[in-house]
Each structure stands twice: as C-alpha cells, then as structure tokens.
Image 1 (cartoon, rainbow, N blue to C red):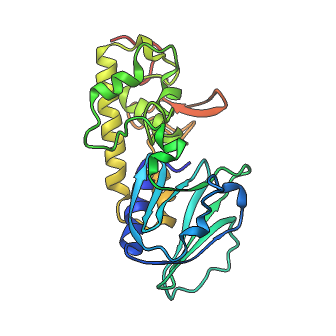
Image 2 (cartoon, rainbow, N blue to C red):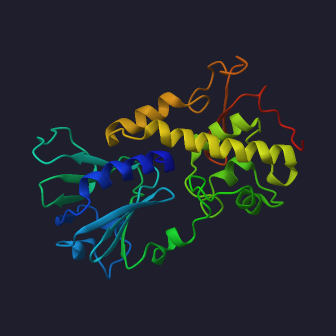
Length: 274
C-alpha cells in the first residue's frame, strides 16, 4: 500500500518533470476509477500543469482547468516514461494514461485483485469527499501533540487500527503503523483509551520521527525504486520470524481485523498506561 512518505517522494519527482507541461492526451482504460462523471478526466486535455501536491496518500495535479485527484488505494502506483525513453514490453495493469506535450508518459496502474485507484476532477481538492475527510497530516510541520490527542481521545479502539484511520491521521498505512508502534514500544492491540502520558508522548515522537525519516530517505528516488526502498527500511513490518533489531526476540506476525501486523512481543508488551 502506498503511504505518505512514498507518495511525497513521488509528488516531488513528478513535479520537477510535469510543471508547466500541457496534457496532450488523457485516456482512461478502466472507467470505474472515475468518480466525477460530470467532469471526466478527458476534460483536462489541453490544460497546463501548474503544480502538484500530496493529500495524505492522494496525489493532486493542479491544472489551468481544475484539479486532477488520484487516489492509489491498496495497490495503485505510477509508471513513468520520460520523453524519448523507449516503452517497456512488460505488460502492466494500466487503468489510466497521461501523455504530456513533451512526449513523457505517466501510466496509472493498479496491481490488486480489487480495483481501488480513483480519479476525480474538481475545482478544489476538498471538493473530493475522501480529501475533505482527511485528518491532520503527520508530515506537516504544523502537526502537533494536540492533533494526536484529538485523534486518540479516550477511544476504545486498537491503536494500530486508529493510526491507519485516515479521518484521524492522514497518510499512515499498515507498514508505517507497525514501525511507529515498535519505536513507541506499544502493542498493536492496546486501546487508545488506556494510553498514559508517557505512552502518548512516545507515540507522538515515533510518528514524527518515523514518517519524517522515511520521507528524507525516499527523497530523490524514481517511482520504480520507492517500494523496494520502503521494504528494505522496515525494522519489523514484513519481518515475521526474524530477530527484533532492538532485542533479538523473534518478531510475531498476526492478523487483526483482516490486516497483518508484525511486532516484537518483548519490546511491545500488551500493557500500557505509563
């Protein structure tokens, strides 16, 4: 699943290449991704790219004719082909394609079993329901301890699920929630309501540090290398059975609510409230 550090790196990569370019072609191969039927993406053909922004795990293209908003879902991503670069013979599950006036091509792909990529055209990003509902973004310099407190409250919800709730905190997914909880020494099953002041401070610091460090580490990488870099950087996520990098205890792999979680049972005990 694309998460905000990789999406931020993608936005920076693309912005340097599509800024001030004109959309020469915009083809939708899978009509189900379009969520604004009254404003189809093809209406942006001929528009000039003003800039790009990230909204949680979504990408926004600001154009002279409105915003093109793309949500990647669980398995969406971008394949980039620079102007003059030969096309790859590798078949890809392409759901949309943008051709720019310099000949560069951006393919939107979805490799999942269930289609989850979305595309919308709007006057403003917040006109898209999924963007309007986003909570505070941990990558924002304005993200504060108070933002986290409002997200946590006294909710009887497992902290791993809460971290991935986009209306509470924007941009964190399955992988980074595991990494954050390991750094904060919190079990994924503990409820927000029982977290003490020390737990909450560690959680805040872990969110800021893990997400910020991930952006710094991914910055400058091309889109096709971001997933590999993310996987290589994980301390516990995806490493069930391997030794914890802190204490060498085998990392446990469990399913919670249909999603996997990896954690260290020694570093992340079930109790909380400190």
